[in-house]
Length: 363
Image (cartoon, rainbow, N blue to C red; front, side, top):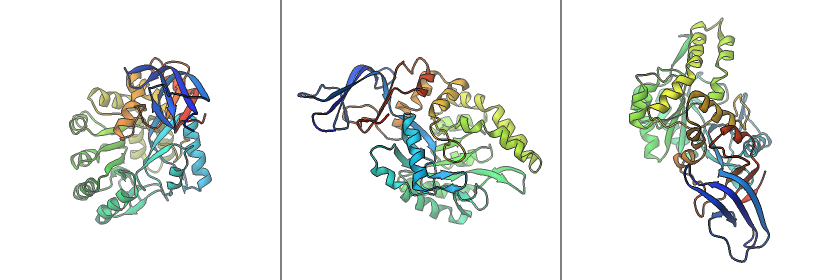
């Protein structure tokens, strides 16, 4: 956009949950609250504007079989963009998606490198599959490759036990998380079950994905340590089908997955009530489609999180947690405009009127 080409957003600009302004201007791709002098070629958009939505757990460059080609990765990113999701935390991908950073028309991505899993204890072709003695070295490697995050697989089905068990001994986890922190990276972990959570949190982990295994005993520990969760409830909805598929071979695991699913809403609500930070993530890119952020926000509301807080978990709070700006003066103009107030009804998020990325209307 040239010095004289300006976008004018009018109506209600939700800079924060309670910071509502009448208009903003986009000049050279940046947000401003001062009318530019001498502006011409002004395009006006009217509605309710919020910062670009955040999916804090997805996978660009990954499908059910493993890494995908650039055309598929592009389609995934465009699907998110067209849903108003303009900031993605990629929670593990075997594909090199750095080329996306050069595309001003695609969402911004915060990468966690590639998943780090125990040998034969995760989905084939997704992760580095290693033994505990190599954990520190691989965490250091992925910390250097990522954008400030590392992703561990904290638990998975143990075929000998016939159920979910922890993947890593406590000592190796402590050393690995300490190394990530030394390198300036935060650590998150996939965890469905209860068994790995205490060791991970006491070892200093920063976030837990899914967190369906949270118990009354563990919730205060998470709250005390400030460990965030990304529940991915749209993914947890698949648990009954997974359980049915494993019923004959792994009946203990199957029953466990059903219990975790049954209590999913209570788990999330109890975590929120205890003060645990909760963020929106869809787990798109493995078996789930991209573009499901509105559905996940709706799931958080169904779990009992107040609508304004569920909205914040994909806008203001999520961006602050990830260290990315919202609609502050001078920030990149990444925003979504709706016909109605999404604070009053989060279902509005499913129907963006206009999508602005890097100051340009892209949808």
